[in-house]
Amino acid sequence: MSLKIFGNKSSTAKVSSDMEKQRRYEALVRAWHRDLFRYAYWLTKDQHVAEDLVQETCLRAWRSLDSLQDDNAAKAWLITILRRENARRFERKQLELVDIDDHQVADNTQPSEEASVEQQWLHKQIMRLSPEYREPLVLQVMAGFSGDEIAEIMDLNKNTVMTRLFRARNQLKEFMDNQNETQRGAKNGRA
Image (cartoon, rainbow, N blue to C red; front, side, top):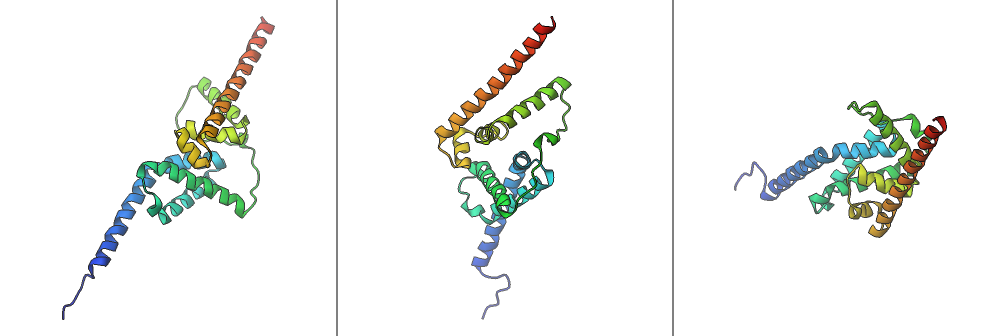
């Protein structure tokens, strides 16, 4: 009769597998946590809600980590989970509406006053876009996703995404052209 102190091979393999899952998960969280928070904050405009949303996203990611087949697709996978978690938030309860113009993302860099004004103006113009155009543009510009990735995240056809991106850019260009015409008119009126 032999005494087994350290268990059998299958329990050792399970521990090794669990440790590998833990390392993989921690690497994903380290790599994408900031992007997840930035996108969550953009969606919610509230730091605490964004933190909760990222935490819920990470919890769901841990539970379904085995379904992630390609680590190169991790960012899109995590953003998709975050979008779904955000949607679940609205299914659970009705939230108080907040005027998004009253809140701005904290930025530790000190841009010039002119750059800051331009950034605020651009943010305001992006928020004027309808959500169907705004969201793909933000996913591309802020998160750096390709058209294919945005299509997967939003569960849309790639051509639809590319059309929305094209229209969003055109609308922003129109906003800019209108502002330039207004400024020229104001200068000519004063001169």
